[in-house]
Amino acid sequence: MNPIDEPNNALLPSGFIDLLQHEAEAEARGIEAVMDVFAQHGYERVRPPLLEFETSLLHGAGQALGEQTFRLMDPESRRMMALRPDMTTQIARIAATRLAASPRPLRLSYAGTCVVVGVPGREGERQITQAGIELIGVDSAEADAEVVLVAAEALAHLGVEDVSFDLSYPALVQKIVDEAGLNAVKRAQLVHALDRKDATAVAELGGSAAEILTRLLQAAGPAGPALEVLAALELSEAARVLADRLREVVAVIHAHAPELRLTVDPVEFRGWQYHTGVCVTVFARGQREELGRGGRYLAHDEEPACGLTLRPEVLLRAARPIALRPRVYVPLGAERTRAAQLRREGYATVVGLDELADYRAEAQRLGCAYILSHDELTKL
Image 1 (cartoon, one colour):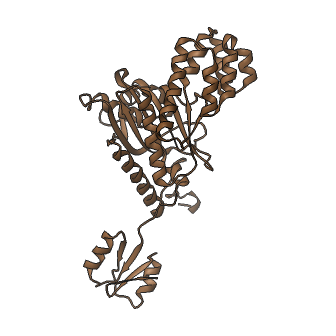
Image 2 (cartoon, rainbow, N blue to C red):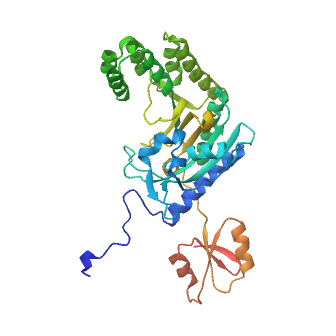
Image 3 (cartoon, rainbow, N blue to C red):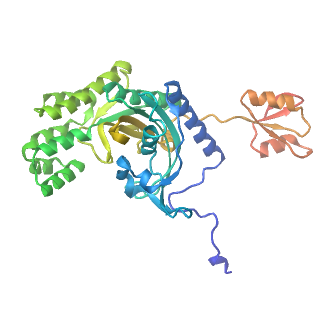
């Protein structure tokens, strides 16, 4: 075969990458640190499969994920299967089936890999990692606030600084738009204008809701001033209930974490296909991408639920560097008891496999920071 025509066995599909030694270990340790915080708050870990039958994975709220889903044929059953693009709906399935008899509120946590396709702005990221929590069986401001507070603690544990939680309520905007009584064409145009934050177009297309929607567009910003604008608006009774819920969630969060930075974007609804209540997006200063997102939704059988999913590959770029285990070179024939003690103390031991004239040079070649010599630890 012509060398030019030979396949490149190192070439990976677009959107998939290898994580090498230090990167993979740092990610794993970072995820476990986050999961440990979740466990401390009573969230019990579950592990759904990467692959499910399409009819199961895309059932109910999962229908909104159809365009993001890789599909393939099961060679045994001849049924279509799908790779999960998101783990939230899988947790909802587990809660409604395997854990249907478990007492509510049900607190579950999870971490794993997802495969996505066709996500605008993230075409180069087809394999992503998720770590999150779901609080199932309760519909209250306290539950909405809890997932934010637990996530904030997990980020603080990793050393992520200047974190901001951006709250939105897609159902509130949808309610106001519905009440405007627009025909299908004008409604679609108005939704598009809101999506683009085009105040001029919103004023022209909004009909009876134009003034309210324009003021909501202008209200985006720190939670305090934004909620003052919401409180001053003349909303219908149904819309006021939704606005009050947002205010209650902010009040609960600030009661427990007054220093936490909260912003409110009253008209943000992009990407919230199956959410029904208060939603949250997590940002950190200096990071272009969001660190996570979540919100309230209806799980299987219309059971109320809320949750938040973090993206470890993004948040670890914003976190302080993960301290890896210092490597110690243990020459061939050295006392293994001392090496075992070092491992218990948090070191990684690299045992030599050959008799060498210069063990220090070998230790440095293998990336070790220390060498064990006559049971003494020596820094290189």
